[in-house]
Amino acid sequence: WNIISSVGSLISLISVILLLFIMWEALSVQRKSLSSLNMSSSIEWMQKLPPAEHSYNELPMLSTK
Image (cartoon, rainbow, N blue to C red; front, side, top):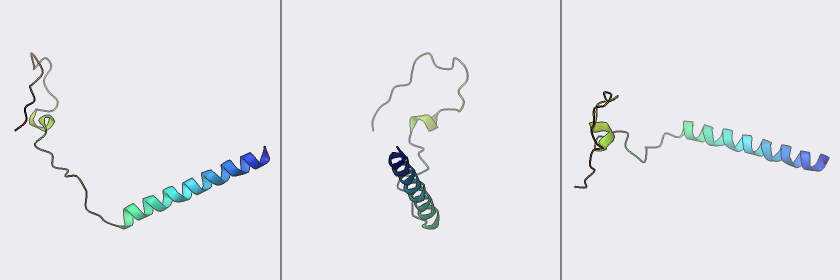
């Protein structure tokens, strides 16, 4: 059981080191975002937030342009 515990501890240690490396690399290298934060074409952004209670009789229809 001691060997199994040691292997599990080693896996946990490697995982924490990998997590810290990924976080450091993500914060140190300023890459451009792959998706735009301005998604004004989405139907969610066209509505008032939060909507008034009972403001819709039915769900709005989605249509493609």
